[in-house]
Amino acid sequence: MLRIAVQAKGRLNEQSMDLLKEAGVTVSQEKRKFLMRAADFPAEIIFLRDDDIPQTVAIGAADLGIVGYNEVAEKGLEVNLMQKLGFGGCRLSLAVPKTENYTGLEYFNGKRIATSYPEILRRFFADNDIDAEIHTITGSVEIAPTAGLADAIFDIVSSGGTLVSNGLVEVEKVVFSEAVLIGNPELPEEKMALARKLMSRFEAVRNGIGKKYLLMNIPVSSLQKAIDRLPAMRSPTVIPLANGDWCSVQTVVDENNLWNIIEDLKGLGAEGILVLSLDKIVM
Ligand code: PRT
Ligand code: ZN
Image (cartoon, rainbow, N blue to C red; front, side, top):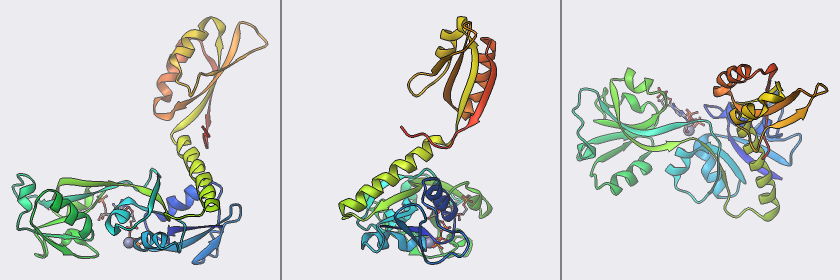
């Protein structure tokens, strides 16, 4: 039985639970408890604050965890980074008041920087020979310059809206982060086998995102041109039809290229074009 740590509430909770569900690990959403057994996979989910997930996995109180890479990097504990999960994207950046004349990293020498990520910042400044004062604060880091508590901040940025509304500009992007699957470094083989199964399911879910299944009938005379136009994992599936002048062509396409492909195929005489939703792709 695998124990998987997930953020109890907050930005990563919903997408973590959705990913697990898509991967066949479901827990009842009704009476949610601190620890819940999955119905259909030998796993239990433990719900924690995200700050506690790296340590819980490092000491083996959970076998796996889903958490932002930023938390893993800050804690610096011994855990295996097993898989990037493709959601919760953000970056840790240095930002200064927009009235400042920022000339480069040396700007930070002798400055006071407010952050909830002191370890990552300490390492970054050490690597770049910058001597600054790091002030660790939890909570609203972005108000520190206006409140006179700091000259600059080092914080999570995603859209950048919070910086703008606090009169700050992002001047250095230091670490890029997304949700990751972490594991205890000493998982016994039977748990590792379950973890591998989970990772390949996660990958299948991710592969299906932004993809559609496309089916159409095409005159045999245009078949080669249609195949040349279509992307495919290996090559498109071609099925003969009862009417020997036509065949059915089926393949997976990227959603963002869908309309261009459909219009080109119509130009080649395609008819009866069906676009189907796609859930998972197991390679
Ligand atoms: O209660 P708990 O301790 O579990 O949660 P938390 O409050 O510490 O974290 P939470 O739920 O806010 O975030 C969890 C994780 O989501 C973070 O550790 C990141 O990995 C990831 N993430 C992704 C973000 C953001 N995007 C994000 N935008 N975490 C925080 N923010 C904050 C950011 O600090 C800024 O103040 O959201 C604000 C808005 O950002 P903009 O740039 O879009 O305006
Ligand atoms: Zn937290």
